[in-house]
Length: 403
Ligand code: ADP
Ligand code: ASP
Ligand code: MG
Image 1 (cartoon, rainbow, N blue to C red):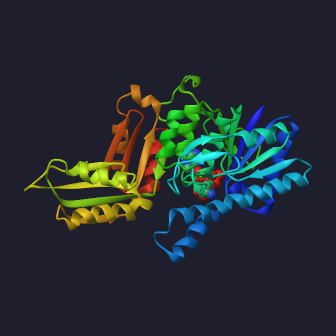
Image 2: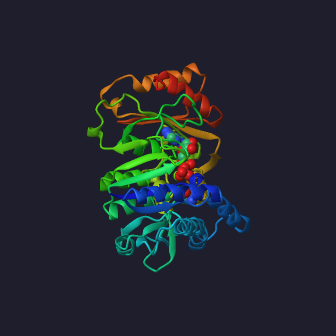
Image 3: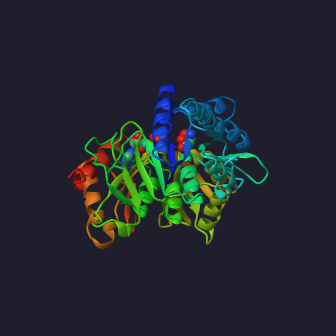
């Protein structure tokens, strides 16, 4: 079999753990498999590098950020290849560029455009273990780019797709996908299987165990994706097509996203096209808008509230200021003390009352809901951040996910 194995930050968090990864990879190779390993930076390393840049600038240049941030993954890829060689294997470390990962030009959140797997394939043909630095690629001009936070998951899935690997294993610090973050709700249960669509919702709604674009890519390329722990040999969770799951549960999981901010625009001029102007400008500035609420207009003015990731606030403010300056918005305010809790499950499609139960759970816990949005397979609520954990545990209980 050809297996892509990705090891996250905690799994390569210190030299002893890198040694442990080397032993695991070594035994898979000895079992007769061809192995491509994708590694993250050591845990905390990327945040440390971001902090270094922020010491000098609030808005550092994207190209320099990518050169800086991509260095963390190069360290672990080289060290792991050295450790594997010492164990008697033929191993080669590659940057994203050497692995043939070509992206667009959106520094710090680049999209993969194509993968030219020739270098990786040649090394595999020579019997080598290929170790790729995750989270990075190269644009058409040859500048290094990075794929957004958590992007090593995407590197692994994309490589598995390009090489038509039999399996892509994501090794992390929990033993699979749980009904909710086991660090918040110790009663959370590990799922044997979950559908791509549910996993995509959970990941997009804050469950950082898999980067959302990696799940999207796995679905598109039909990659057999397994999440498991690098600290034991416990079986993990298979992320697969919905038809491979016999009994779809009503609710599969609860997700929490603390990284949301609410932007309130007051006294917005009530003219045709104003929402289109504001939100097009936000989109052009790459601001990721999620929920939007517009109130009924009074005296020619209305209020619009929307949520964005905390990291997009600066860019959003520049856009909002341009409307404040031309008099079309009277006042703006920014609230980072909010979070979004979501209930996800494909079973909701065919059942009523799922949303009502979420709302009454909030009411029973005296939690005020600020915003609501729903889709076929999810219900999301914006609430004050101080109630985040209470809400997650309350919902986990209400849908009996520990049973
Ligand atoms: P890595 O560094 O290996 O990429 P991450 O920190 O990105 O690992 O993701 C793993 C973490 O995701 C876990 O430690 C856990 O706290 C969190 N997590 C959030 N939601 C879930 C969930 N539903 N199931 C499992 N883990 C979850
Ligand atoms: N090191 C990067 C991050 O912390 C990428 C990753 O770990 O997947 O976001
Ligand atoms: Mg991760």
